[in-house]
Image (tube, rainbow, N blue to C red; front, side, top):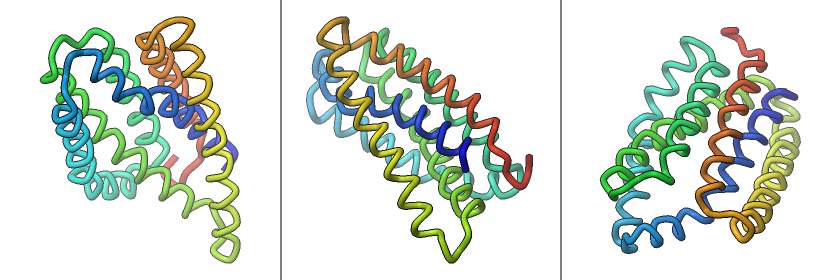
Length: 178
């Protein structure tokens, strides 16, 4: 459980850096809120469509490898955001990120179930989510300061780096297919 917590804290730190400021990024790129809504819908729909396949693949090949791949896919997507020139590029990145999100969520939940004792699962999951929530909140605060000092683009690059590192931490997780 230790490496799951470490890897997900790194990944959720990266997410916490970017996602609260994503609306600002979209607005500064000249898009309207309808475009933002459509981009978010593409993320949610692509994620929903990928969840079932993610579940089947993680059952077959293991969960930690897909946790790592999803993190690297997110890192790949985030590094391109500062250079997008049209909303269509944002839409493509949102679809990629939606699929990565499905693999991350499915792998994380399945690993938690695999690693916890049924009689203590609630307490263990509660503790896990306490720490991931605290780390995510700290990322939001830190990103706010960073944007004031540097720029919004720097947040995307830093989050991409954290996602990339989080992928390697995910490979340290021992799951039943490792």
